[in-house]
Length: 138
Image (cartoon, rainbow, N blue to C red):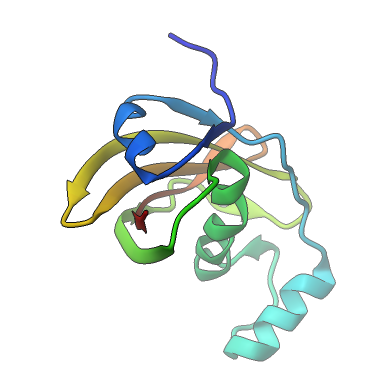
């Protein structure tokens, strides 16, 4: 199996060649109690020992651009998510890391739609697995 890498492509058409590519993210973050308190105030959730799943899900878009970069495009659209799971609770004190896998890339009209599975880990366990769907137009 190939070593995961951060991928940078010149344009949307280049995404079509990436299916099956494992993506790596050198970026790591650790959330503080202050981050969780701000999130709790904004959403009405109570502060807790574990990171709420909806907070984890919001971090997918923090990690994705650190793994896959399209250098030149006229428009990018975050279509949404194909599937999401939260296999293990994430503790607030543990650093969060992520890796990715390009599941598919298809020509859709004048754009390219790419599905990337982003797997966030904390404490050595998978804590969020999200299949992101994005479209890029040249």
